[in-house]
Figure (tube, rainbow, N blue to C red):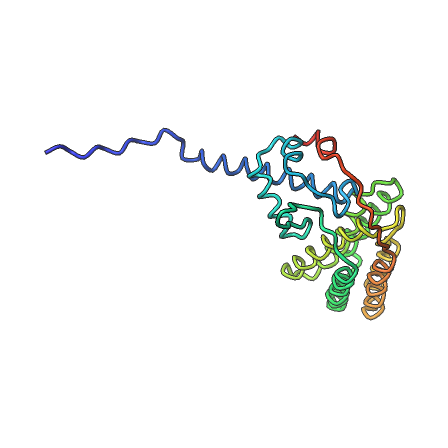
Length: 246
């Protein structure tokens, strides 16, 4: 009777599959980050069509990887995926904009009210430093950095509460607000006012939570009404835009 053949040992290193997976994830993160940064810097306006072949050429990746990035960005509402049309940068309408800002008002006013016993000059010092960076970025014309710091201000205030679930919800809303600024903002306007950021911190530090709530509500409402609609969607050369990202 013949013996059954022995299993041949695998020649692949056990960690090889893990290494490949980590490499692909790093590539996905690189492509995602580049697209998001282009949106923040107004180099990819809302409504821009993301042509797969051009992006694959620009980033030096295959369609499979790019489509995984698209799924992530669609889940984050940075892009929209439509059958027979492909991917486009999200183009939220006025009603959606109002609803997102309304959600932020409700959440952030509640956060401010809950912080009345936790905010001290010491806990607010780092946020004051962030506002100084925000002001410097705006005055230097560093648009992408200014938008990022403006959003980070609101996240840092929420972080003082120590509720990570609430922080995650707010982070998603802020990301969507950023897209709306990219769509509706007037060039050179200070939609998310850093001066108002300081006023909110002053009220918190003084223990006047109701005034801080009123200021936050006024701040977010003001950001919404400052935005204006610009329906023009210019053509974007995706290869030229991302040629250094490959």
